[in-house]
Image (cartoon, rainbow, N blue to C red; front, side, top):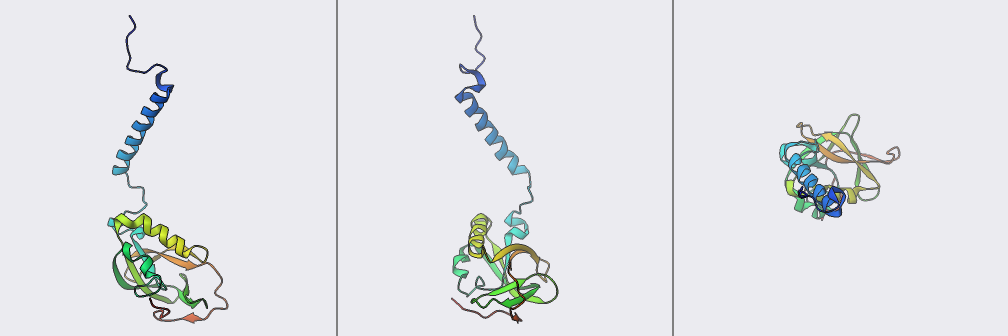
Length: 166
């Protein structure tokens, strides 16, 4: 008499066996993710992914803030080291190196909307700006978008940018 080992005909290599293995692996990965910090930044822990520093049209009260305001928990005035320039296109451009100060806002992002916020910021800024890590004068780590073009022929600005409002 043949003993039933619990495997379907064809063993673990059958479609049912492979599906079962994949399901178990998925559960194991999900459980492991609960205990492992990948360093990606949980918005509840104060990491740079939870904050964005904005200095132009994405500041509260300005043209593109409406596209991101549903992601924002809190806004505070902030400044970071760098220089801000007139892009001549209706928005400022910043370089976050050297001396100087860029004035703007620190946006705290809702933890449950962080992925969506990242995608929206990337779509809005792609092609002209790239995400960089900055630290506010108050010591908060944040993501900001730095101008990727040359600033050689651009006029340097100081203070808070006062461009087009919403």
